[in-house]
Image (cartoon, rainbow, N blue to C red):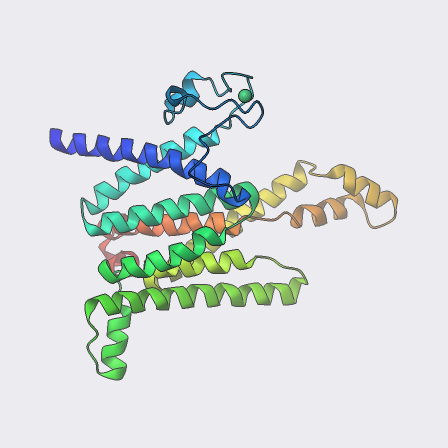
Length: 308
Ligand SMILES: [Zn+2]
């Protein structure tokens, strides 16, 4: 038991340190700045951050969320992401032990954390994460196949051939990527045809290809299901909150004075234009499948063929 605690503590600390690197990726990749150098500095006074202030979570706490030199507030996003990454690393150990699968799901988790938070912050899903992530997903799937084995079943039933394990894993990844990206691409095209403007970008489509390469067909389907459900629920709630909270009511008032409609209609129209971070919901969906799936299958065996 004591050994177990030590390993959990190790995974947690390792996750905190990785989380602090993910913060660097999240803030620098969208701005096309190198993630290696220079070291972190304050965006206002340019003072380099001291190594002892750069300790995950604790650094932010003892600085009380402010730059030591000029007092510029530091976003609580940084310690929160470090903490979340630490907890996800512990979850990976608890569910998958110390196995090849753990390496695969930890790598996938890091990609998802970067994309989820980047989309939330700046509404971008950088190619620099999507494409290498897609390739890595296929490679990982060769060693740790997505756990539905759909490709080998398909090949056995339809073509009467036995596919070697590593190839079946890659094929499952390709199936998942194709299914996820085409479905989302179709939805995007349909949305544009109905609403007359873009509802989601190609970034979401590429992100689904990356997720599919890791999760295979079934996991990709479940991710789309959970992600879009979450997106619709939170999306509707958010748009209602923006409307009721009087978001951009000044713009609506002016437009209404120019006779473009009643103020309430215009406020509703403006709130509905709010761009939702679909990539964030898809990322949370994929994390829920990786970490929640095996738990659900264990708790309720009736779902075991579906989710885990
Ligand atoms: Zn400063």
